[in-house]
Amino acid sequence: MKNAVLRLLRENSPGYISGEEICKRMGVSRTAIWKHIQALRAEGYDIDSQTHSGYRLVAVPDRLYPEEIYCGLESVILGRNVYYFDSTASTNQAAREIAAGGGAEGTLVVAEEQTGGRGRMGRGWYAPRYLGIFCSLILRPELPPTEAPPVTMLAAVALARAIQEVCHIKAGIKWPNDILIGGKKLCGILTEMSAEMERLNYLVVGMGVNVNTADFPGELKEIATSLKIETGAFVSRRLLLQRLLYQFEQLYRVWLDKGFKPVLAEWKEYCVTLNCPVRVTSVRETLEGWAEDVDDTGALLLRLPDGTLKQLVAGEVSLRTQ
Ligand code: ATP
Image (cartoon, rainbow, N blue to C red; front, side, top):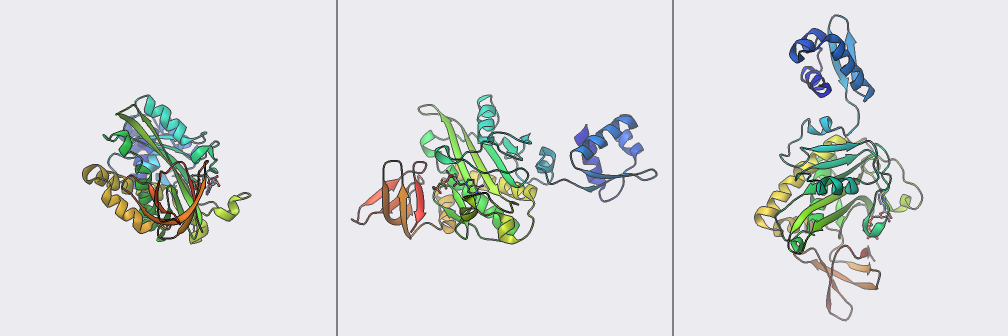
């Protein structure tokens, strides 16, 4: 009901709609309408009311409410069902629970803040309230589990496309799961999978984007950046998320219809950690060599000083350019 009132206000924006008209369209009393208007105001919607003209939507809040995401969203499946949290430990964790309970393909979990956000290998992810996009998508592609890992690379391309579209800056992809600008980390991606031997149950693709963060704490100051820092301007998280969902869906279709090759080709155009010397660290060892290529499974092909080619699987290693 509250959302229906919001839709009417939006349809008439920037003009007024009378209380009487809202009552007639919704078949409820003026008191009920007033309560919904108050509830919307409490959520941050700026709604003007004039005795003779009625109500007018003046401004919407910078929040990722489901209604805000749906309004103007061009994707058909992704982000059509949104679970919203003002704060949650981790959107990936919430998404895994929702997926385990039958959450449909395309379901999006979004939070204004993550208190226990994770990177790979149990590392933390800094996710301050209202300043970034912290979200996870549930996907159920009909693929064998072995073919699923490149979805992380697909997500990186979708993010890079959306950033280019909204902010007009070219982001670089760092193998396997980060987006960088000027060598500093802008986004991280964490994919988790539930599968049995031959069958993929679901994928959860978590993405953290530093959007309007003005500064970072401690050691992150040196290694992290945000779109606001890079562009010098406030960036609409709603718009960026909508474009991300749209671009993700386009690439996802290509992947399922034509295979991963076309997505990989675009990924390579954005990649800034290929054809350069790199150091790769895993729990077992540190290897130095030339980042020669990435194969169709998303593994890095590292040319070692002795001339051998080593295949490195994402998820186990950290990469640094030398
Ligand atoms: P590496 O850079 O070693 O390869 P990674 O890039 O894969 O690791 P993740 O494990 O995906 O890193 O992300 C966690 C790391 O990212 C943390 O250890 C921290 O250094 C950094 N980090 C945490 N929060 C943020 C943030 N909001 N923006 C940028 N970097 C962050």
